Amino acid sequence: MNRNLALNIILALFVLLLGCGRSDKPQSNATSNDSISTAPFDIDKVPEDLRDLAPLAQKWGNPDDAGRAALIESASAADLQVLRDTVVPRTTRITEWLDSFPHNTLSNEAAAFMYLLELIDELSNE
Image (cartoon, rainbow, N blue to C red; front, side):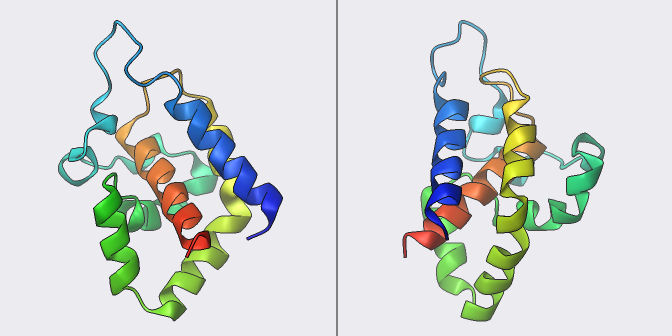
């Protein structure tokens, strides 16, 4: 992964997580470890130009570090390469969408995409 893309992903994650725990409002369920697996995924809440990536976000966008590590460990090198090749070119657009949410208000769908980007970043660190 090129350096600029990796820096953009890290910056986006930092900005999204900057306000975690600082709000007087209750936090969105999207930040809890079980939200992705228990909350329904409403594809209508995903921008139309990103909907083709929704199945990937649902499968790979695990909020748990250990869960993402297990997904990576159990995947074939070919599957991981296809995942990279599919998601990396769309990282900027995904980040733009995620940046449109106020702090601590990511929808479950957006959180799945955020964790998908985190998994992609973790792949680059292997």
